[in-house]
Amino acid sequence: MAQQAKLFRGLADPSRLAILEALRLGALSVSEIVAATGLSQPNASNHLRCLSECGLVAGEPRGRFVYYRLTDPRIGELLALVGELLEGTARNVDSCENYRAD
Image (tube, rainbow, N blue to C red; front, side):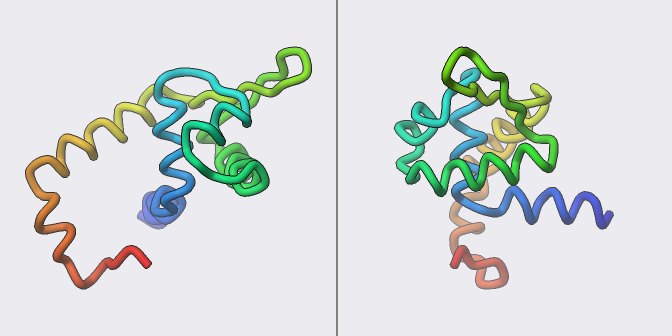
């Protein structure tokens, strides 16, 4: 249970979620991640380091750039399932006072 909670805490950050969502389509360089997410380059790099250290993404050097990808396709599947789940419960999640997005 503690490991699951730790994973979900890591996924709770909107910036990390945006990066993972962007990587669902395939490997991207940092500059492509910045363009896809609207994050600053230092912020994206910081979150990529966190996601990499936790084993959710991996970087592969290609010439002058490093391309990041999801380490397991089930991460993308999990994000897709969450999207489907929210289609039916989004209103309830939005009105929930217990877990506010601050």
